[in-house]
Image (cartoon, rainbow, N blue to C red; front, side, top):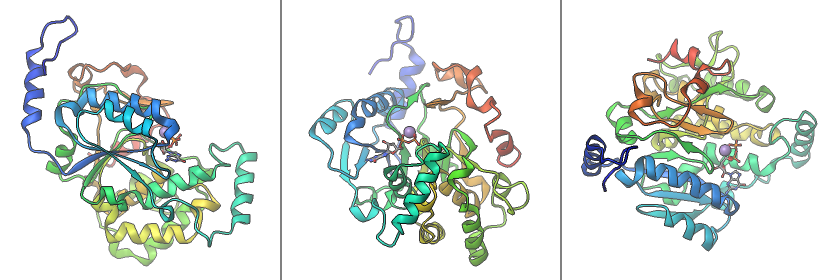
Length: 337
Ligand code: GDP
Ligand code: MN
């Protein structure tokens, strides 16, 4: 597995760390993608990049989930670009579709209202199914039971830098549970009552809120109002045992019981982020500054510590999302290390 550098000469450092990576112990981890059969080209694109930038050297298995059976074409083309194991699973109906007790008339009225306000995915039921599944169910899927760690990858993303260490092992060794690359503000119209529901939960469950939580990342007034900051969830490296734990399960059930995933358009990103920030200490959250990741329309491109050069990154560090006024990173840096 020789690595050729830009001038066609074997780069000894590169092949050394690749060899070292291959022999290291592995974490109990999988790379996870939720996709439709129609996403096959975009899925192949993302998978090819992560295999090339890291996974061909560490060989983590992939899991693909879909509420429909994956087509033979999807399985064949995706498997073909994966160095190791790929598993394809179907999502149980009850983890995906809108529950019977949801008042469909009320849900429809809310969707119509969001369409008239031009809110992204405002009229989509399938998007709401996806957000609720990603919030409360993916980690319960039978194919994921054996794993502790997952890396969420979406179709059509780009990995801009070589990754010369194992991010799962990093999480493990530094006692982290949640890792992200981009933090930004949510559209307030999609979550009008999410914070009220969260405050209700907190009031009833003070036992889940440790002293050194990250409320100051979520709120500028000690929890009175939500500042809309959240971790963008199209990239996540995280510990499923956190989602499987009592605090998160009770929080999800509380949120779900309000119907807000359908009466509004709650995203899995703010739901996960609020939980990650409140139900554990702030040192559990990790900013993967050195992983170049693009999900349109935003890119996180490493700028610091020589990471851009070391990772042979192809992205433009000047256009990293971190520097834009929409990023919550400034605010994060006041809080996390
Ligand atoms: P966005 O990133 O918020 O614009 O939403 P995406 O369309 O990228 O969806 C987020 C993730 O869910 C991606 O991995 C999609 O492939 C997946 N996804 C979205 N809708 C569906 C769906 O109806 N069925 C399946 N199986 N996957 C979906
Ligand atoms: Mn996406």
